[in-house]
Image 1 (cartoon, rainbow, N blue to C red):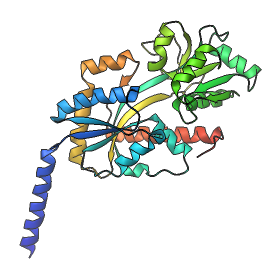
Image 2 (spheres, one colour):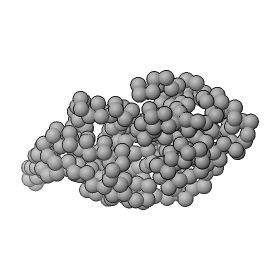
Image 3 (cartoon, helix red, strand yellow):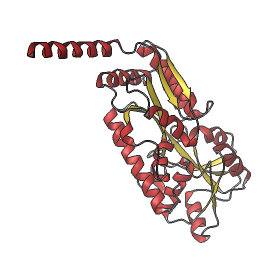
Image 4 (spheres, rainbow, N blue to C red):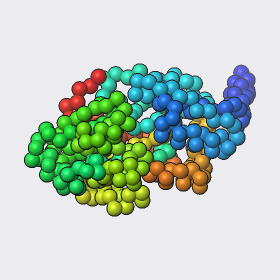
Length: 318
């Protein structure tokens, strides 16, 4: 009997090992929980092409927008843990955990794979604004509590939360003006309907270069190569301030270690592609490619930061 059992378990192990060794045997899908055409979609597609080359199979981008990314993330949470369905996660996911009282998934439903990229936000005003720099903005906000307005692409967006973190850290009373998306928010900032906003560098850099917006500060820990003359918030007003629009890959929890390792290797190799690195640099993004454990720690810190921001700002949870 013992001999039969040993033979059975040995055969099972060999079959499992053979299955993992053959991975991937079919196309891999990256679910992007946002609409086609945006920055997240564009970067995900460029990454997918290079991952496909490194994996030796097609990597398909499947856009599943809706409910601030919750629809697409729910789909991946329920997917088989076999390495054939990945999630292209982003900053709003961490914010959602702070804003929503309940979600159809938990962090335990996912296995972090790697942080792909981080992109800073820029604090901007219209070119003709009388607010010339951060010191001027802070002084104006303190002299006129509740008068200065800040725009965002919506209540749960990175732009809104970045400004909340900023004003809380500096003790400023400012009025939030939410828009349906980032585009109208930038337009009204340029038009002077609102005073100031945080915008991701990919969206606002062309407008800064064209002289339509003035950059006051950047949300990364250090200055951006795209805007070397613009100080970081952390160096000039609020030490420790850091906000990024990040993107990373998650897998369903329970994905075999061998598959995780294979996918992680493909991600790291893809991020070393010179053309992809150049594309990231052009929009002010930084390629990362850290380990699953490092990405997990990063996600924990992001969730804690936004939970505290929501609590201190007394922002109504949904």
